[in-house]
Amino acid sequence: GLSRDQVKDAGLEREVASAYDRLGDILGGSRASNLGDAAGGLNCYRKSLAILERISAQQPGNFTVLRDTARAHTKVSDLLAITGKLQEALDEDKKALAIYDAWVTATPSDPAARRGLATGLQELAGDLDRAGRFEEALANRRKVLSIFEELDASAAKPDPSLKLQLALAYKRL
Image 1 (cartoon, rainbow, N blue to C red):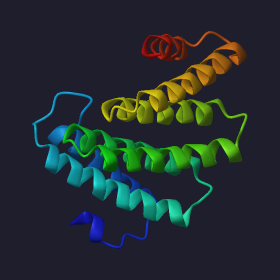
Image 2 (spheres, rainbow, N blue to C red):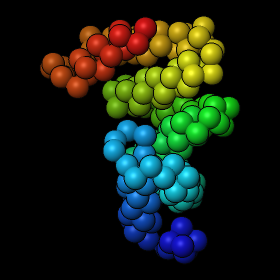
Image 3 (cartoon, helix red, strand yellow):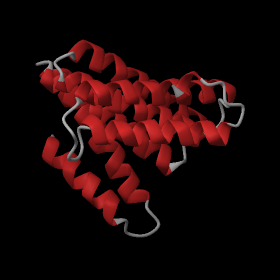
């Protein structure tokens, strides 16, 4: 397959990863209508993730690639959770969260990094809920709310998508 090819062009590799990601969405993605093939979707997401991890290792300061890698872990987590593999899903959530934490540590004033961290925490909280670990989920949801409140308070101008994320954080609490 394409993921086994040793492509030397990082841009082309990202395109291949993106193609696997889109194919995963079509086959079995959890966030939109799909063909109902969770196993096929998971396989594609894992191929995308493998490519992104390889690029991330080669370009550790490339936050766009790191963000995409964290998102890929989240998509893998979503399908693992849907198929009842909650511990594996939590492991993927934690990998995504570690990437977001590193991003925030490297660029603490970057709102995109903090938004990513909040999103990662929200994903983890959802899987903790599914696993019946409600206190841990609640603690993560409180962190999410705090981050979105800080981002909203410091925004230079009103941001409708941030307001929506803040509202959803309140709802999920």
